[in-house]
Amino acid sequence: MSSIPILKRFGFNIETEQKSIYPFSPVYKIDHYIVKRTQFPIERALNLVQYITYLERSSIDIVTPVKLSFNNPQQIEDECFVCYPFIEGVAYEGSDEQIIQAGELLGLIHSSSTIENRFQLEEYDVFDFNYQEVEEHIKEIEKFVEFYHVNIDTLQLKTLLNRAVENQVSIRNSTISWIDTPHDFKANNLIYKEKRPVLIDPDNAKWIPRAFDLALVMLLFHNELASAPNRVFTSDEWNLFLSGYLKHQTPSEEESAQWEAIVLHVFLDEVMWLMAEVEKDWKRTEQRELFVSLANVIANLEDYPL
Image 1 (cartoon, rainbow, N blue to C red):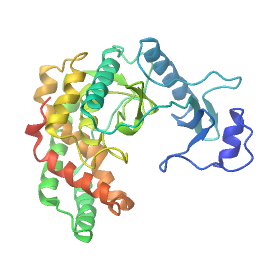
Image 2 (image 1 turned 45 degrees about the horizontal axis):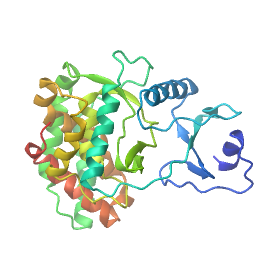
Image 3 (image 1 turned 30 degrees about the vertical axis):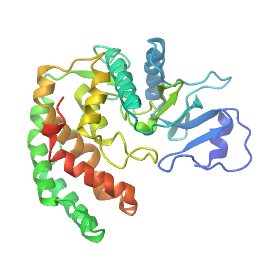
Image 4 (image 1 turned 90 degrees about the vertical axis):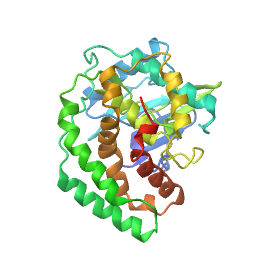
């Protein structure tokens, strides 16, 4: 879809096509505003706005839609778009202080969760992976590993992912805590304003197991950000993140006991396809380094306890 009619719907009289500032989805910066795709259909987009407005009123540093003389968000054909303020600040660079502050922010978000999905966010329900999917994805990963001469033990990776398939039903049936959360809590979705992180992309909000949100952070917090290290957190950095998080949330005994199985499940859901299906990532040295780090970390999860 052309950017021009989208932006005009929000009152921006742009006559030339705008280039997205994000390579994976339409995100347009106009003056001090960001117009981007959000959840679809409009009912879900409006539920999302209610949720993030609730977080903002709970003193969470998060963007919310700007007040316009036009509807915000809006459904445009078969997509929904929203206009947020552009947040001035600095990107994450991996300092100890930034890591701790990010952990504190996620802890505050989790501590603000409603009990029964008050905002009717989409409920996570991906517990149906099978061994054939693992086999097919590993074959694709093996091709990239061989072509780019990358040091990843694909046999070990396959064993771990098959274990994740085995465990998914028991995780689904467990009593681990579920929360509403913006999800996709990664460094590239944070801007540090006055030395405090602001969440600038809350549009993947879900009702999801709390530990899944943490596992995604552990695995992909450094993904797709040039100023971040080309690797997963070190174990020391993970402990720094947790030191901030634990100021506001305490994992349950069951979450801690199932932590390794949970991390493997999130890898199965969020990382396996990334390594198998996005060939252009393998062409980039920094992303190959991250993939190696990911494979090493899930083989040594005892170094990353919850």
